Each structure stands twice: as C-alpha cells, then as structure tokens.
Length: 250
View 1 (tube, rainbow, N blue to C red):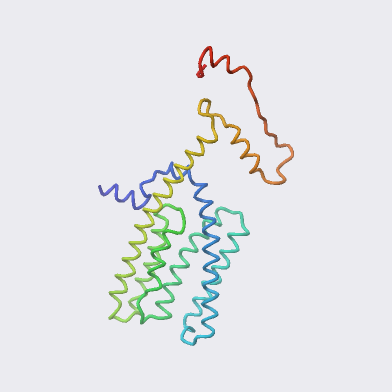
View 2 (cartoon, helix red, strand yellow):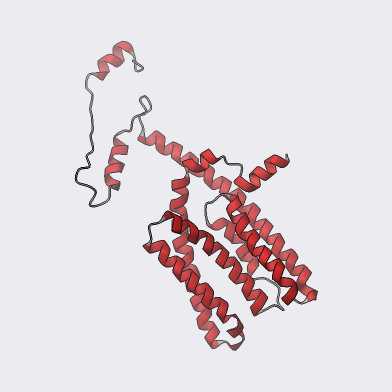
C-alpha cells in the first residue's frame, strides 16, 4: 500500500513509457501555458508597480514587484522568441518558483505582521499550471516551503506564526495532491487522444499510413523545406482479386 501511495505521489501512477508517448503533447501544452502565464504575470507585476508608486504603504513591496516583473518579462520573451525546448522547460520551473518565492517575500519582508494569504492561492495553482510529473512541482513547492519555514520564525509575530505555518503547509499539500490527480487525468487523456489519432491516420489491416496522414503531413510542412525532399505515394492495383480469392491477410 505504501509503495502504491509513493508511486502515485511521485509519478501519478503513470509509467515512464506512457510519459514518453505523450511528451510532445505535454510540451506543446506547456509552451502555450508558459506564454499565457508569463504574459499574465508580467501584466500583474506592472500593475502592482504602478500602484506602488501611487500608494505609499505599498512602497515596501516595490522591490519584490520589480524583481518579479523583470523575471516575468524575461520568461515571456524567452517563450515567444526562443525555440529551445530546454530553455522553455527551465523557464517553466523558474516561473513556478518565481511566483511562489515572490509571494513568500511579499509576506515575509513586505508585510510580516499579516497572515500569508498571498501564498495560499499560488500554492494551490502552481501544481496545475504545467503538464509535468508530480515530483517536479513537489520539488518546486517543497523548496519554497523550506525557504518560508527557515525565515518565518525570525520575522513573523509569535501570535500568528503557528497558524501561518499550518496554513502554508496545508495548502501546499492540498495543491500537490490536486495537481497529481489532474496530471493523471491529463496524461490519460493524451494517451487516449493518441490512440484515436493513430486509428484515424493508419490503415487497420496493414498499419500503413493512409491518405489522411499524407494530407496532414503535406499541410504541416514548413515553408521553405529542402528542395530535395520528396513525398512518394504508391497505389497497388489488383488487390480486390487477391482479397476475394485468398482473403485480406494474404
């Protein structure tokens, strides 16, 4: 039982082979999410910086807004103008950690006398942002919580410290569990979609690609592909007589 629980927490009970079969689908979705989320984060930080210039009591949080905004803009540019999958993957982890750490710094340094409400929604949402193995967002959320636990006792008032720690850890665990379940559902959906696509693009008898696959390939070819690239389509005549006399398997 314990082994199954650990497997579910780390991999969402999905094998490495299954993750490999859907890695391209996961990457495409992650890139879209990275672009959208980094653009949203950039907008939010710019708004917060503008408000910080007008509202005096927000001045203590301005350094966090500036740092977060700078990272968000950098990630947003990298997601749109770079074609490196490794860079995009790094930006995903950086964005998650930036959102968590910025929430931590705002509450620990900007408003230590208040409960850590800024981190609670982020802790719930971060595991839902990207399609990755649960162990990835467990590490990201765990690192952020470790930073919080290390700093909070020195800056938080004793009367709210215990409640604050319980809230942060509880919502972090809840976010991880929810993210694990959602990851399992997403991966299984990708696997099912790939099976349906295979049925649509391959002949059921010979397992060869069919005309629909050919049309999709031609339509997806980038402009300016090498001139020595050639598609070959072969049509075999006389199969009906063989089918009728010896059967499809022959």
